[in-house]
Length: 427
Ligand code: S3P
Image (cartoon, rainbow, N blue to C red; front, side, top):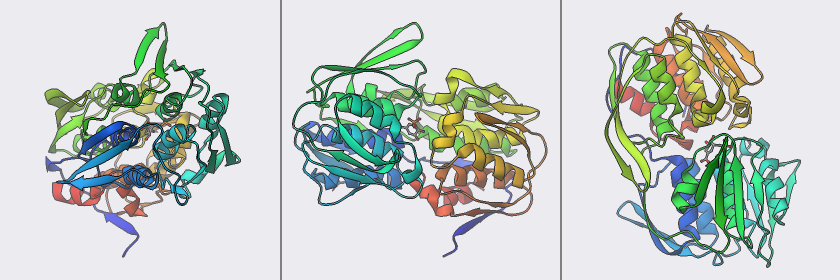
C-alpha cells in the first residue's frame, strides 16, 4: 500500500457530501454518557480514529457500550461507577480524549496512565496539570507531556475558580469535568470564547461580565442520560467549502452540518473574502444549531484575520491559508500561536507546504501572511502526522498544476475517513 496519495488538479467539484459526525461533540457524548446515571443512545457516532479513541477508553473503564442499528447504547456508570482499567488508556492522536478524560480521572479512586501516539506525546499537558493540581489532584507527566499518570483519591477534589491562560475548550472542559468530582462549585473564566459544546451538553450555568464568560459546574451532579444526535462536523465541511470556492464551476451541498457559532468563524471569514455560501433548513439538534450548506465557486479576496475570532476557526486555519494562497491580495492570520501546539506545528507545516507549492508566504510567531493570486504548483507535502495538514494540502493540490503527493495521507482518517474518495467522487 502506498503511503502517499497523489492529487491531480481538478476542474470543478459537484455533488452532495455527508460530512463525518462532529468530532468534538462525539467525544463529549461518549464521555458524558459514560458517567451519567442511566442509559444513553448516541446517534451517528463517527468511525473516525479520534472519537474511537474516546470510545475505547470508556470501554476500558468498565462502561458497557453496545451497537444497535448503527447507534451506540451506553450504559452509564454514574460519577462513581468507573472501574480501574486493566492497562494504559490509549488516547491515540486525540488531544481531546486525553485532556477531557483527565478531568474525569482526576476524581477517581484508582490510578490510571494515559498514553498517546508520537504527535500527542509532545503536546503540552501542563495546561491541564496545573488546574487539576490546584484542585488537589495528583498527576505526573514527563516534562509536561504524556504519558500522564493520574493517582487515585478517595476524597473529593477542591472546587476552584480558574481563569484560562489560553483560549482552550479542552482545558475548560477538563476543569469543568473535574468540577463534577469537587466539593462545591467550580468555575472557569474565559476572556475569549472557545467552543461551548461542554457547557451546552451538560447544561452548565454561564454568564457574561464585561469581556469575561464564567461557566460553572456543581460537584456531584452527573450528566443527564439522554439521546445524543451528532451533527456533521463543520471542521470537516471546511475543506469542501474552500475547495468548492476555489474551483470554478463548483457546487457542493453539505446537509446537516453543525453551525454552533463558536465553530463557524471560517464561514464568516470566507464570506468576507467573497465566498458564496448559503445556509438552508436551519434547525436545532441536541441543543446545537445545524443547517444544510450550499457552496458555489467565487473569486476570493485576501483579508486580515486576528483577535477574538481565532478560537472559533482555530482548526480551520490550515485550509484558510490555502484559500489565501488563491485569493487576490494578502491574507494575514495573526494571534494564532496556539496553532503551534496542535497535532503538528501547523504554522510551520502550512508555511513549508505552501512555499513548496510556489506561494509567497511570510511566517510570524503567531501566524502567517500569504500573498495570493498566482497558481500553485504540485509538490511533495509532509503532513507531520496531522490530519488537517493532509486534507488542506489535498485541496491545494486540486487547484495546482502537476501532481501533489500527500505523504502519510491515511492520517486523514483521524477525523474524515474516506476524504480522498469524497474528493474523487466530486470531480
Ligand atoms: C477541541 C478544542 C480545540 C480544537 C480541537 C478540539 C475540543 O483544542 O483545536 O481540535 O473538542 O474541545 P483547544 O481546546 O486545545 O484549543
